[in-house]
Image (cartoon, rainbow, N blue to C red):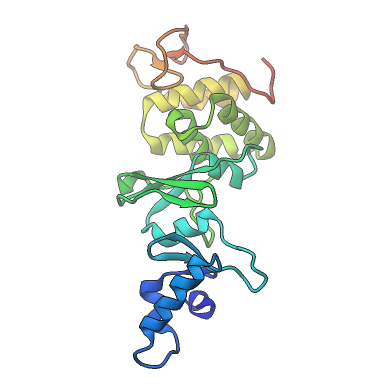
Length: 254
């Protein structure tokens, strides 16, 4: 089974419905192979993540597979792992997130593995963009992940954590803010441009924030800094944002 999984490009991950038929077993022995899989799973020798998804320990009994690897197998393209797990991937947070947010064009059930949960959010394929150009699981690039957590509190990343990630990304890469602006343009939302522009203005500087002004729209009504939050707080007149949550960073004291 390990060999079949490797040949299929997913080491350590078995899809019984596809892989058992490829095993070099005598004709008529597939039922015995399925029974062997059932016994191994019951004994804890292999891990059943869901009905047709098994994780195979290596020869020493260790699991070399993590939840994003399973997401890469079950989620049809295009998909995007964003929010906290993407920030972890880029070392923009020291927080470990047990929940993994996945944008996908298909409706999929949650996936649970080793105390972690992948939640699949059905999304218009046109809004699934911004992943790393790398093999393996499709993690959002830093600028896309930061936009998502700033604008979707339900992704379970606090505003302070999101601001910290932005400040750290900017400190590491002088081209980060221009890429963040490009991502804001792709988002196509004046509300997003206002929130991000305000934060860049406060924590990076007015000069860096100036280009975001072209994308904040003409509507004078303020937007909430934290969507779905309380409509209380001071309004920043420049960016037309109602600051309804503490605007602070652990990295930069203001």
